[in-house]
Image (cartoon, rainbow, N blue to C red; front, side, top):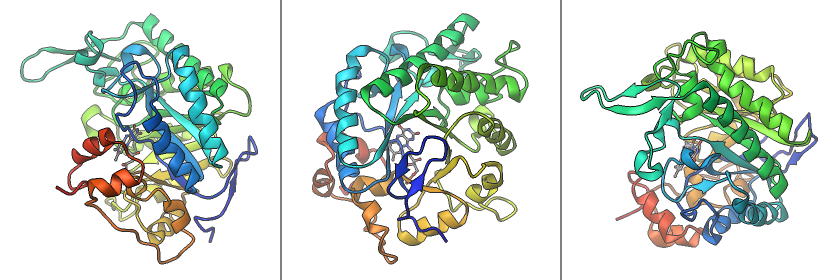
Length: 360
Ligand SMILES: Cc1cc2nc3c(=O)[nH]c(=O)nc-3n(C[C@H](O)[C@H](O)[C@H](O)COP(=O)(O)O)c2cc1C
């Protein structure tokens, strides 16, 4: 069996990751109001590169000004973001990790309080009880403009020195709103059949490829199922097949709980494995904590072990994987423990909103 501490070489580009530890994207609220990076956000990520992660993903970063989902979010929509991105990319590279910026648009989850306009969605969305307009339908022209924005953002990331981007097609944001039957009821080329609902993501990948070099890595993250917006496991399997026919380097499944058993007793990671060719790296994420967990996930077929929460408190988690008995302390963590792990007070405050993570 391949161990989580083993190297991985990307078939298409030749990039080498020093191990299979993948830091999944984590929003941390530490960016400036205009989306430029702060030293706090740079320090939180470079610490995890210095401490051994193979691949580091940044927080979700909005590709256009009005796609912002929350306060303190990182932006990649303007050349003003360039200097901060450059500083982060060179810091991460010096410390030995491969580095991805997660690019996204909030769609109907980009609130009007932040963006001073009604949010947008593939189809109009109304509040069930009041009939109030929650999100307006995107015009066709706007969809094509947004596709260009994703490509422009990726170009900006490559120019800043990142190895690649992760296209965020998970967690009910704009791309998954296109995939979902409830949020996408369009009758043009972007709605209707699954092939049409996939078109937004497909065109984004093509646009990123067009605007970046052959060496640039592309990861795509999807959720296997989201009932609230109408994404089923069956559709997601078809999406994974369509994705893997494209020129992507990583397929990332966001499970939240990789140990969850499906009706037939199988788990999500194993379920998707047959549809991901060996030439594409398969990342699975959700509720992994110990070396035993990481080894189990790889036995289910993952090439990389994605982690989020454990890496907040344990920046050197990747190194721990060399010890087969490694099972680091679990939540709750004290404020001091988290400050010591290079979280700023702003990030610690945000983590206090995650049930049971920060001790009172
Ligand atoms: C504080 C926090 C922020 C997150 N922000 C993002 C994000 O920006 N983009 C994303 O795709 N997932 C985000 N996630 C989800 C994680 O990437 C991951 O999938 C999830 O936490 C499950 O993994 P874990 O059990 O190892 O924490 C976030 C999770 C946490 C805990």
